[in-house]
Amino acid sequence: MAKTCIVCGQAAGSGEHVFPAALGGRRVNSGIYCPKHDNSYSGLVSEIAGQLDFFNAYLGVRPDHSSHLKTAFGEHTLTGETVSISAKEIRFTKPRVISRTPVGEGEELHLGFPNQQSVKQFTKKMEDDGHEWTPLSKPSMRPYITGSIHHKRKFGGACGLGAIAYMTQTFFAQEFPEVARSGALSDFINYTQATAKVAAQGGCEQQPEEREEMIEARAALAAALEPFGGKAPAWWDFSPPVGARANKFEFGHQVTVGIDGSDGQIYGRVALFSAFTFAMRLGTAPQGSATREVTVDIDPLAEHPPHDIEKHQVFSAPGRVHVPENATEGLADALANGTQQHAFANLLERMEEHQLLKLARTMSKALAPCPTLSSLEARALIEKELSQQPQQIWRMATFVVEGLKEKMVKGNLQAITPMLDGLIAHDIQSVSGLSRQAEATLTLAKAALTAQMEEDCAAGLLNEARITELMGRGPGLHVVGQAVLAPVLLVLGESPHSNEVSG
Ligand SMILES: [Zn+2]
Image 1 (tube, rainbow, N blue to C red):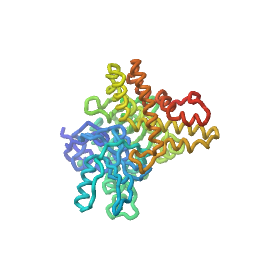
Image 2 (image 1 turned 90 degrees about the horizontal axis):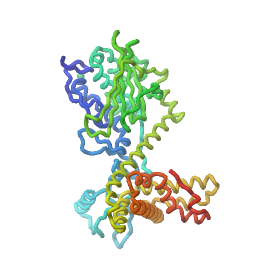
Image 3 (image 1 turned 30 degrees about the vertical axis):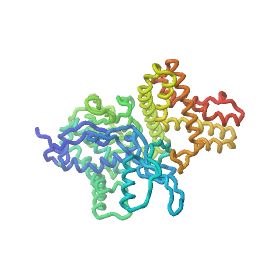
Image 4 (image 1 turned 180 degrees about the vertical axis):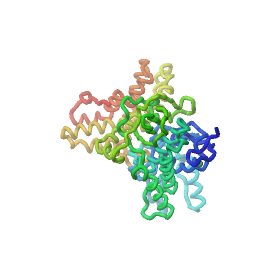
């Protein structure tokens, strides 16, 4: 039987991704949409990809058909400049002025560039524009310590939910091809199509003055929602079915589609990163439809099939959904009682842990020859490796300083807090992004970690597990805390030993 488009019934055959390529989906199915209707959903896909870009970038997801890892953009809080965020690094996107000093009739500029290419472009532009200038030194590579990065996250919304609904509809069509073409999904497809049109017009956010096409697209969406009582048939869900299967993959997504034959309910559930969960009602299946549920776990970090998904099927409907009275209630309640913040914080925590393990694996490989080296060579190697991790060492240093600060405030010793703030102060006008004192803090922390690693290496203990502990857990925080806080604790008349720092 020839495959037909589930939207229009014409011949299908475009190679659409079952799970969006932008989110790391690796599977193509060529029998669900015609090229026109496959394309019609691209606005929704880019919307959800935009909403999730920070997570995908931080995790190092590679979009399918791309050789590059995902990059997201954020704002560097201190300078207000745009930075790009990837699993590898955070960097400024444009050249920036670090400092300027008047000299004679001109001025001396100290500039920072994101990369060598940017230096070349800048040099060329200066020449093209006819500026008189002389480079005072060759550019050198220096690490920059970023403080906080501001990234606007906005989840869900009409388009976000529409994108989730579209993804689920595609999975349903794949697992239940006949029901998907029986007309049972027609209201739901009208809804995803109408949302897709709003997204394609750039209408995911309400504009103050909207064009005629946009007003029409919004009216069409309102009409498409009528069969659902005016509310989207997809919603945030915070009551996953009891006994739901855990995702096979650490940062996996999960899509569940099913039919409950007892009343024909067609339902779907989506969990992104095992953190953000949605549910939807897709329609009513023809009488006599068999009860069946299919769950697919998707690993966005898998490079290619076959180990990128894991599929399960049951002949029951444990995931059937309960349409909420008020669809927005779920999210409002969750925001009010902290469920959503908790899910978000938990995801960030898992991602940081993942980063730490990755870092430890890399360092452990590099430091493997350590026990065979002379002590001088071993030290040089350890120093070199630690020099490549300034951001992580900085993270530990700020963690112990902030920790002590909190303790001081609780103990009514606020007087000491300016001193602690000074230890980790940023400075816009410095090459490293840190004040001199903060640079000294970082140097102290690095030296302490070097000494500890040298000792562990000599004792034959510097394995991957130990490196993980030293680069981000209690033992590392203790070492860094001893070094960084010692001067402050001396002032307080406390011995560093009485101030156990734990992570
Ligand atoms: Zn079509």
